[in-house]
Length: 127
Image 1: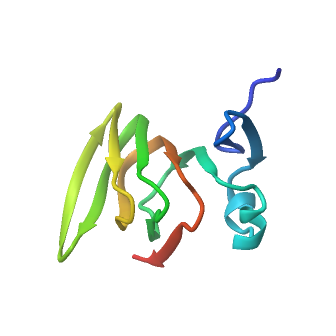
Image 2: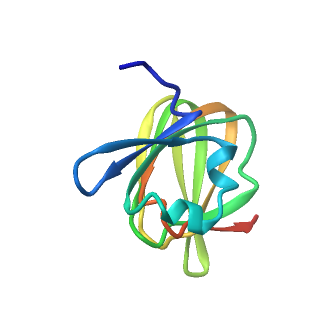
Image 3: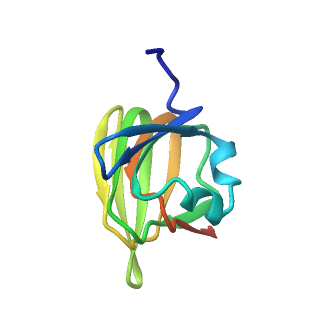
């Protein structure tokens, strides 16, 4: 077994208890929904190196999302009805974004984030 970079190779935790390697980074996000659906259901594990604020809001309709700050400082913004709640993560820490909640991030210093979510059906909209 070789080591890997979760920013370049995502992992899918399947409902059968297997772990599948997927193309990561931009390669994953430019795939069509049909291409992503071919992987089946499961939990997507990915890492992002964030240098600046996210340029979009995202929402995961199939499950909650774990956002684990590995290093840096980030404010997660969660849209809750007509209000936006801020979760501040500094140096290390974890937040759970509930299923179906639009969220984005303000990056205060370069940061590394680990994400675990059911990626199927993820939606994006501009900030």
